[in-house]
Amino acid sequence: MIRTRQGEAMRIGLQTWGSHGDVRPFLALAEGLRGAGHDVVLVITCVDSDAYAHIAPRAGLDIRVVASPVLGPKDAGKVGATVFDTSDPMKQMAKILRLCFTPVEEPMFAAAQRLCAECDLLIGHFFMHPLRAAAELAGRPYASVMLSHGGIPSAHDHPMSSLGPASLGKRLLWWVTRLAINRALKADTNALRQRVGLPPVRDMIDDVWLSRELTLVAVSPSIAVQQPDWPPAVRLTGFLDMPNLAMEGTVPPDLQAFLAAGEPPVYMTLGSWMPADPGWQRQTLELLTEAARLAGCRAIIQSADAAGCGFTSSAQVLYVQAAPHQAVFPHCCAVLHHGGAGTTQSATLAGKPSIVVAHISEQEHWGRELHRLGMAGKPVHRRKATAANLAKLIRQVRGTPAMADAAAAVGTAMRKENGVATAVDLIGRVFGKAEPRAAAR
Image 1 (cartoon, rainbow, N blue to C red):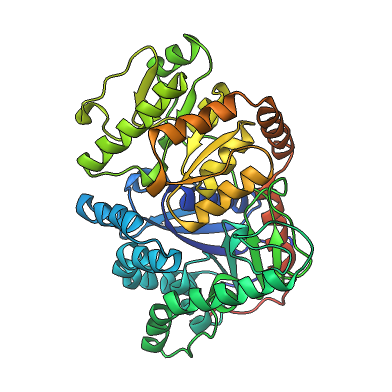
Image 2 (cartoon, rainbow, N blue to C red):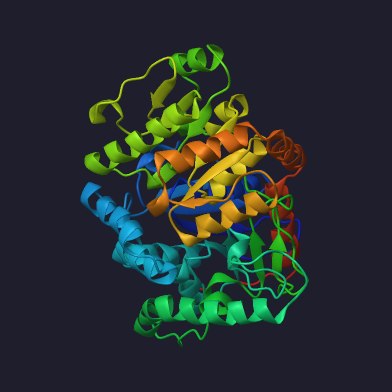
């Protein structure tokens, strides 16, 4: 295998880990690279689902599912408990990774080594330090994909601050943030590197999350800003999106009928953060159902097993196990969600305002961004969410035409973007210029 000049085919290995919101952008990028003539291998480790094992293979795209799902029902309950019991965001992140990432680190690293033996270029989820290590060992070029702009240091912006001129305050915030990230995550990353004979990383952001060759920031430029002090290799591409996947299904008749039967509803989904534990799931369903009642709105509430938790659909509330968001969101008046990168951008792509119920710090950042852009009220953390304050946020969104107008404007702009095409072009420009060389044996 050789790496070739720009415009010629490469064999490209991609690896991701996480929930649906971490996998779908990589599927979109893999399809885009395949459409550009490259041979693509995509390795997926999904925290909460084995659905990707059933994706039909097609020419030019090899999908491999490793150690999925990571979590069983009992372990999923531990993640939920971590959200409620841990207020420090860095400690929370470290605990979640030790539950969801560390147990499958070795099989992911083995899959990464296989990718490096087969491929000319490696592209990884920004958390995917095993792939980064394998690429270093094999001497392969490596690109990173950031699914949020909130993890990229800038004197102009910080997840806990607002956009504006560069300031000493934001620099200080980033110094503290780097320190906290390294304290929480660096030891586990360096433990793997030591086992395989690599030197330790000094900084998680600079040496793991970002690639010095190319970092793709998979966020719409209608939401994020390419900051002037980002490293030159960090490039904003736009949302890595694709048409509805077959595994996501179509709009079932009962959902079609509900949408047609009255005023546009609020779609409510907490994505992979909807508890799998029956007791916690019932409690969450009670929260969302009561919020809809107090707000006086129709609602579609997404839950794995509402019937098993004792909830029955009515003319006002429809409970669904899943639904293709791209097909349904445009018919809703707003989306109540957890603030994940994928759901956030799917809601804005549909031109709908949001109510954000954040569980972790990254989701709070997305909520603040939507609030800054006038498309949502202030986000509420799941620990502090009550039916009354969620109902108040729903009424605010429904009673503020400016929010709907702002969301519609961003949605219109996003539909003119093509993040996948931008990313594929950047990959070709950066990695297609080197002289051909033989792959490591």
